[in-house]
Amino acid sequence: MLTIMKTASLIVVLILALTFCLFAQTPNYGQPPQGVALTPPMGWNSWNKFACNVSADLIQQTADAMVSSGMKDAGYEYVVIDDCWQVSRDANGNVQADPQRFPNGIKAVADYVHSKGLKFGIYSDTGTLTCQKRPGSRGYEFQDARQYAAWGVDYLKYDWCNTSTQDAPSSYALMRDALVATGKPIVFSICEWGKNKPWLWGGQVGNLWRTTDDIEDRWEGLHKWPGGSCCSYGMLDIVDAQVGLETYAGPGHWNDPDMLEVGNGGMTNTEYRSHFSLWAMMAAPLMAGNDLRSMSPEIKEILTNKEVIAVNQDKLGRQGRRVHKEGDLEIWSKPLADGTRAVILFNRSKEQKEVMAAWEDIGYPAHLSASVRDLWQHKDLGKFTGKFTAQVPSHGVLMVTVKP
Ligand code: GAL
Image (cartoon, rainbow, N blue to C red; front, side):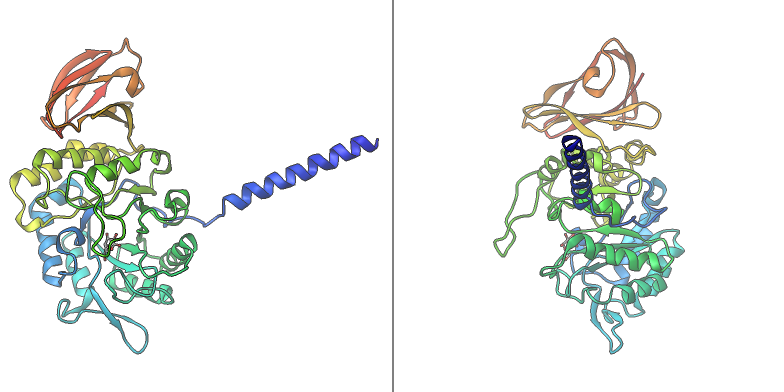
């Protein structure tokens, strides 16, 4: 009898310990803003091209260009001012825009963007100061969120500079609560560079979360920041850092491998096509980062390729993954809502190479006959059984759909 009782109490203790461990390891931070970013957000952000050189004129001209270039028609929606729009707080703590650069204030800019049928986004920081030492939102979360909502802000990018010992998930959850309390749907973009594994908690707090340090406009290579700390990322370094994070993404909550560099001049058009295809494949937010007012026809064609964008915006919301790698040759695959697969044959090498996508690698049986369509040539390539093989240029992709 004594042994039975001992065993029973041991079991109870074990169950309690297990329950405690489970709950202790998965704190509940709530829910991200609802009903927004059900597909990866698309838009434009000022930082990659303009850094602190932002103004009302730039934002208004960019909104105009987004419409006239066909980007709006292709699905781009948010026009986001990054760091440096803000200069101080007034005696009541209200954040003030730079009066020289935004002479009529932020609401006038937001109204202009809205008048073009677009949405408007802004930037702040979780800490006391932004990365460019402008006022951050720490201690002003609810006041700032109310101000943003009154201006008509639809999207907030929230950075992580000057945060001292702040706890990331709860600091971001605080601003999330402030945004939700406004009653206005505002996309919440978490930008803490992947430092606190945001893929583990970001889906409870925000609609997208940066997974790495900043992208820079080059094919590959980590470069130290001017102060000596590590590092800005080349495009390929960002791609490699996404492997393993696929399951954390889904409608309303996305991994964010940072904004696009397409059109900024540091890569070839072939490389930019790869960059854009891979971002589409990874269900990444598509935030253009170039000067939309002066794009070449080739860059416009890349950014507005509707077939590639359809892969990114597919309603199933699955992040594509690298399913095969042999040295510099890779196959990426993304299941789409209609059962089709989007597939990238990627050649990272310095020479043109033959690349083969085997049906078994993309989750189809080998005997299956399937139609292959080239999403850059906009051309049906025919029916293939078991595999599809093609010549792929150096640093290039062939991006196709494979439909059984
Ligand atoms: C970085 C952020 C960049 C940009 C910049 C502005 O922390 O990753 O995307 O927002 O701050 O200072």
